[in-house]
Length: 129
Image (cartoon, rainbow, N blue to C red; front, side):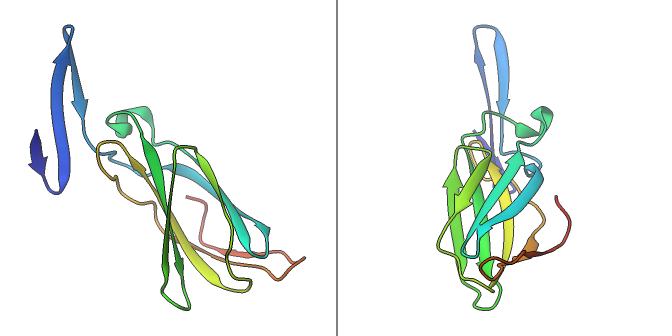
């Protein structure tokens, strides 16, 4: 094992094949966010392209930051999507997602969503990544 720039990189051989394992070099792509209601979000994405995965993706980490309070909420999932309940109506949240192989890859560029009032649409700031 070799450790460089806080990214663990390893190479091993098995039955005449050589495998290179490292953290993902790019974040997940095509991130879509949609409020399920005034207190929960659904996020979906696709894995980084194969040549940037650098191994088997074990999970994804999702970061939400309550903009007004600075509270950091983190979630892990093995799926390419997640439902996040128990959020606050009218709060603004910053969200970003990273893939994990043997370590944590880079997070996607943060975008902001404002939670709607019950029965109202939401305001998304920033582009779909």
